[in-house]
Length: 346
Ligand code: NAD
Ligand code: UFG
Image (cartoon, rainbow, N blue to C red; front, side):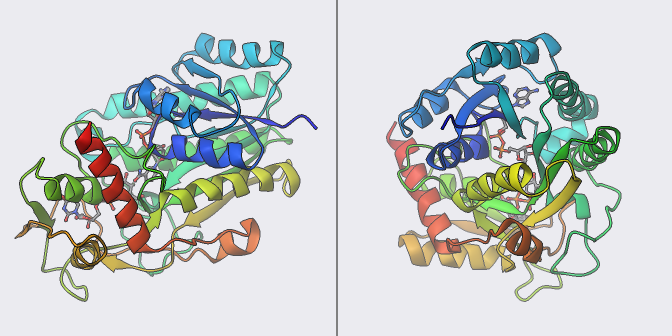
């Protein structure tokens, strides 16, 4: 049987590379595209070394129609037309998005618009979209479920995720055969247990785990805990940290769900998280326990725009996608640390 071809946009990035490995393991044929705005070709080579199929890669920009035409046409001519798309390609730095709103809108919303247009042209009706729990803002009820309203976003990044979800919903309403899974990730951490692929943030990391790992590796000064006077169990913010391999596997389930279960039935949003809220201080404690390393940190002021506490009600993903997280926080932290050590060696 010929396997179905899945196009992964942003396929050289953190979640894209891990998902490509999971897709290949599940028997899909994987095609990647990326414009390297936040990644490098070495990650494509690394993931190619992990799978037993050739993985075509296109340096292409989702905003560029002729780039996308080249990808869809070439694969079709090779006899492997694209059957579904997983759309990771986006800029994701919350702070930068506030400084450069037009760039974020044109890249994230413009890229999605262009992709939908080409998918329609080629009769490709299944899309898995990378959304974020940031669409909920500071939710009234936690754990938050998918029926929670979108709140006005603090950042342009959050706005682009809300806008893309609406764009995709409109596309589904206008195109009867189209269906999409809107995956709202909570906080992905970790790396592939082999440490062959992982997250390589450019410059000073914004996110907790990459910064923490670099601080422990003495590549940076101490980690600052942003805020210790929040109305939470220990005063620091609470998030839902899930392992990137669990997240990768959710994409495999989601694409299968679109092909087999909901074909042409519109859009469905899914929270992807563990269902457990963990504070920043608890993360530090767990990291020290699991790695035996001391985390250098100081207690600092609140970071502007931070949500106090959010974690997922992920029951819908469990019931409908048959997905739930299998890996622990400790495993995620350990895999992040192994990956950091490998990066430090190079
Ligand atoms: P990443 O930056 O590692 O990967 C995104 C990839 O997309 C990069 O390789 C980048 O070069 C590429 N890209 C960006 N714009 C492009 C364009 N116009 N054309 C082609 N390629 C383009 O980020 P990630 O952590 O893997 O995130 C993947 C997706 O998941 C993003 O949409 C992000 O917004 C979303 N997301 C991430 C998180 C997180 O914490 N990592 C949380 C929620 C949602
Ligand atoms: N934090 C620190 N010190 C740091 C970095 C982070 O204390 O140096 C704290 C933050 O204040 C927050 C928690 O660690 O309480 C997690 O922060 P991250 O920056 O790692 O993650 P966020 O929850 O702020 O945001 C992330 C992504 C967004 C995405 C969101 C939801 O950066 O793109 O998860 O998926 F929208």
